[in-house]
Length: 312
Image 1: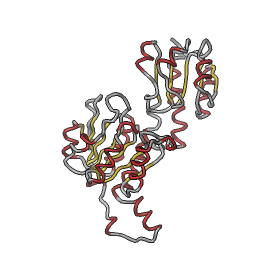
Image 2: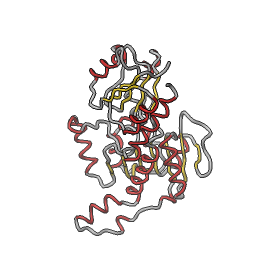
Image 3: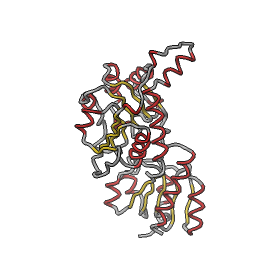
Image 4: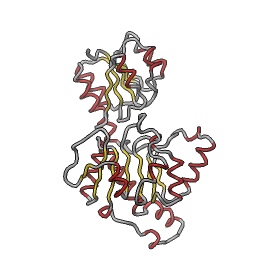
C-alpha cells in the first residue's frame, strides 16, 4: 500500500507542499474543503487525506468513500477520527504529535507560573489601582511536586522543563512503563493522590478519559491541588472543577480547552458555569492555543512529510 495522491483539506505550512513537489507526490490543496468536497475527491481520485479538526471521520464518512487508504492528522489529538472504524477498513492513521510538544510544554509552564505566582490576577488588580503584595504572595516551582498524567510527547516535554527548574515530577501513564529517570519519578495514581501539589493533564480523549476528572477523582487528593488541562475539554467535568474550587479542594485551575469551545452555542447550564468560573481569580483560560505557535505550524508539516515519505 502506497500513497498515490493526497487530498489536503486544511491549512498547512508551505513546507509540506514544497516537500511533496520534491518527492513527486500529487496533491490537491483545498484548505476551505467541506465534508462533501472531501468525500468527492476521495472517490476514485486521492487515496490519502490530510486534515486537522475540520470534520469528524466516522463510520458514516468512511462508508461514503471508496479509495481512502491513509489519514494524516495535522496535530496530536485523534479524537475526531474513528480509528477502530478505520482499522476495520484497512485505513492507516497517523498524526504529528511530536510537532507541538515544546509549544504545549512552554504554554503549560506559563499557565502554571501564572497560577502559583498569581501573575494574571495581580496584573488585573494593579490595572484597577489595587496594590496587594501579601495577598499575592506565591510559591516557588522548586517546592512543588508536579503530577503529570500522560507522559507522551507533551507530558514528557513539560516534565523535562519542570525538572530543570527544580520541581519534583511525578509521572503517570496508563499506556507506558519504564520511562522514569533522573528527577522524573514514574508512579501510580495512588502516589499522585497522596503527594501531588499540581496535576497537569496530557492525555488523549477516548472512552477511558472522557469526564475522567470529576468530583470523585478530585476528592481523592490528600492536599488541595492546582489543576491544569492542556488536552481536551471533555476529559474534565468543568462543573465539578468549579465546585471543588469553591470548596478550596482545587487551589487554581488553568485550562486551554473547554467541553464546548463554540462559546455562542453554550447551553444555559454551560453559560452559568462558565460565568461563575470567569469570575474567579484562580481560573485561567486560553483559547486552545497551547500548541499553536509559528514554529509548531511549520513543524507539523515537517513531521507529516517525514511520515508520508515512508509510504511513497
